[in-house]
Structures are given as C-alpha cells and as structure tokens.
Length: 565
Ligand code: ATP
Ligand code: MG
Ligand code: MG
Ligand code: MG
Image (tube, rainbow, N blue to C red):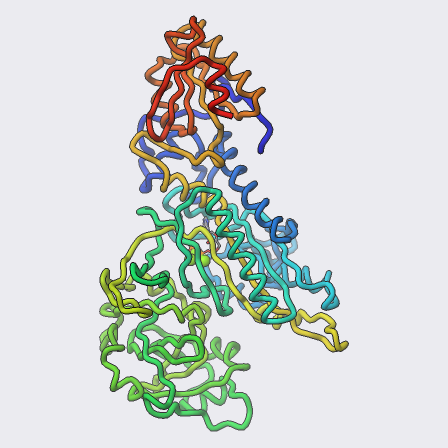
C-alpha cells in the first residue's frame, strides 16, 4: 500500500467545475475534467493533475505487481526512436499517419514509439545469446505516441498515453504458449484487482502481425469497439475480428483449391505471373482466410491492394488460388456478399478463428480468383472497414448457433502470439542445445494504463460523479469540514488520526466554501468513504458515508477509524 498521506483540499491544485467541458463527449471525459483529475493541453494530449496522477499511479502499481509476479522484468526503453528499426520491420510505412515522425539537427529521422516490438527484439538480440538465457519476459510502463485520427473521448484515446507493454521471448512454440498463458492469467488478476468488468474476446492481429490474439474489453457505452457475446456458450469476439463470411474451402466440400504450379516456394513474382499482372500491380477486392482454412468469400469492392507491398509478406508463404465457385453451394455462408457496386452492403459475421486472420486478395484480371496468405490488418487496414461492420443483434453464434448479443466496449488490454515475425526481421537467434542457432519466437502484450483510468471512471461513475473502486481511488477517505473553525479543526485532527492509522486521506478544509458545495465536490471526486465533521463534532460524533450506496451513520471518531481500517 502507498504511504499514508493527508492531502488538504485548500492546497490541492485542482478546481472542480460545475459544467461539462464543451468538447466532452463521454462521461469519463466530462467527470475527470470536472473533478479536476486531468487537464487538456491539446487534442489527445493531457496533463495529469494531482488526483489524476494518484489514480494513474495506483493502476500502475497493480500492473507492476502482477507483472513482477509472473517473473517479467521491468525495463525502460526510449520513446524517441531512430527510424531504421521500424523501417526494417516495415512499420515505418505501414503505420502511415499514425506515427509521429521527427528529424534531428543533422537530418536524421526518428519517431516517437507507438509500441516497441522492434526495439525489444534488438535489445534481446544484444543481451541473450544462448537458449539458457531464455525464456525471458520484459515489460515497461511508458509513454506512447500515436497520432490518432480522432483523439476524442478524453484520456480514453490519447495521442500521448501510458501503456504497459511486455514482450516474451522463447525458443519453442510451447514456450510461447506458456508465456502467453502467464500474461493472460496476470491480466485477469490485474483487471479483477482494478475492479473492472471485462470480457476476453478473440481479436485480429492488427498492425502487429502474427497469429493468436485476444483482447480484454471493458463493456461501456463510451467504448469504441463493438463486440459480440454469445449468451449460450463461451464465444465472444471483437467485431474487428469478424470475417466477411465463413466458408471453409477444404477441397472436399467445395472443390479443389487451385494451386500455383511452381517448384519452389511461390513468390509474388510467381503469383503475378499466374495472374498475368506486373508484380507491382494494384489489385482490387479482399477476402479473408483463417487458421489454415479459407473462410472468406470474395467481396468485389473498391479496396485496392498494392501487390508489390504484398510481395514482401508472400515470399515465405505458400500461395494458392481458389475460385468463387468454391463458395457457390454455400449461400448460407455468403451473408455479407456484396455485388460489384461496393462495400456498403457488406455484412460481417464474427468468427473466432479469425484471430489468425489471413486476408485474400482477388486477382483483378482473373475474375473471382483469390490469393491466400495475406494477413488481415497487416496487408490492409482493418480500420478501413470498421464503419461498415454490421453484425446484428441476434445473428447466429458461429460456435453454437444461439443468437448473439452486441455491445460496446473499451479495449483495455491486448495480447498477441507474434511468432517469429520480428525475430526474422532482426535475425534474433540464440544458440540451441545442439549447438545450432535457434530462431526465437515472441509474444507482445499491452495494457492501456491511462485508458484504464477512463474505463474505470466510465464503469463506476453514477449521476453524482466519479465513484472509484477502493484500491484505485485517489484516497481511502474524504474528510469534509462542514461548518466553521471548530469543524475544520476537528476535520484536520480526524484526518491526522486516519493517516496515522495507515489511510490515505483527502480533507476538505477550504474556508469560505459552503458544506453543500463540499458535499457535491466530495461526490464528484468519488473517494469511496466520506467522513463529515458536522454539527455534532462538539460531542465527538462524525458522520460516515458510503459514496456508492449513500448509506450514512453517526459514530465517534475512534469507531469510524476502526470501520475504515
Ligand atoms: P484501439 O483499437 O483502441 O485503437 P489498439 O488496438 O490500437 O487500440 P494496441 O496496439 O493493442 O491498441 O495497444 C495496447 C493497448 O494500449 C490497447 O489495448 C489500449 O488499451 C491501449 N491504447 C491503444 N491506443 C491508445 C490510445 N490512443 N490512448 C490510450 N490507450 C491506448
Ligand atoms: Mg489503435
Ligand atoms: Mg484495437
Ligand atoms: Mg489492440
């Protein structure tokens, strides 16, 4: 527990506001500003005022304790990063406008880190040389930078924000699965301790690449993610993890997959030659494949894919082609199929297997022909499709057929089994047991630490204001001096005794502020317990109030202290 302290409201650098900030759209944004937790500097850029900093630190502490508990080691990498590592991984380009880029006085190019897979890979390559050095799990709690297109919603979506990011390094797939499981369990503990209501759902890999991936979502109206939840089975998925259509094409059910006739691993050149287009061609239309199975139907639309760029990713992969006939006898699966007019009528259905999503690209010249092994989110922007994602309430669960529920949620954490993507880029090998080099396999795991403040505010607030879970609150008890000098003196004395008993105390000792205003502020600020020094302090009687339930009782100070400790 943090060292006990008394914070006097008369000295607190924070003003409560009666009115919502004009630009605020979400409850957490309004309340965190009104209660004096944060202050906006510019779009998506925030100052953490004393109360806000305390909440942020409390969350950080929980995250740190649980990461330490699974044996992850804390480090701190720079946020200002040279371009070359991100150029090597391809993300300098892929991230596009999301990256904050800058130049130094000599013209050298840099970026402000949006996430750190590249730099951690390089770090481990430097430090670990033998299988004996692995597995290793590293984490940091650090400021991240993303030039978000729509930095609304207060600290929910910052352009500068705090993230806990960790990375695991293993020599075997089983090792990676174990590191992933450890993180998953740690995240469950963290979010439970934070008092967050959350779900674990299947997710696409997004710009990270790689395969297995799950998100931790906190249901809230202000959330920018939509997820489907099955009331009858375990199934839950982010609608981002949704495929156009699920249509397994395994040869037997749907006719043969057309294979490229090539002696070696097909490359983009082989594919381009087969399609009869230049290797630099731009192709239209996308389909999705999942988990070794083709699960997509062609969506003739307006999306273009740069074949040249695709080529880098295709090189080590086996390219196969299938035709639209493969799906012809499965009209049930072609929900969402849109005609050549475009994407506006696309219907998506959620599919758990899309965690391993692979996109398909149709060859523009060869009607309805699709190339396998394009990674969804890596080779095209999933976000481009978000506006047209439509999973309707009541759609059949892909797992059990029951009617799906649809809800909004905030993404508070995300775990990935990256595999060898970054290890391949940076040739991260260690010397194996047999004396031969072994390529390392990685996982990456993020928690939105600053976002969690807003998520907690969203989930716990009521019509009076913020209402923090105990472990996260900026104080354990909010003492209110409701009256004149006698009350103030009694309140300060009580605050001191509570502090001595090990509690974190906020005391409203402001002169010239009416009890009514102080009560309203106490409710707005949302400390779980409120202790009022009011009319009966002369007899040594205080009022103890529970912020959430509103229950109150009068009692002597000593008893209040016993109750609170
Ligand atoms: P989102 O879908 O909300 O844009 P993301 O999928 O891009 O998030 P990740 O790359 O998975 O985010 O990053 C790990 C975690 O960092 C997320 O789960 C989220 O909690 C947090 N995070 C991401 N972007 C932001 C942001 N702009 N502001 C605050 N927290 C963020
Ligand atoms: Mg994002
Ligand atoms: Mg996301
Ligand atoms: Mg994510």
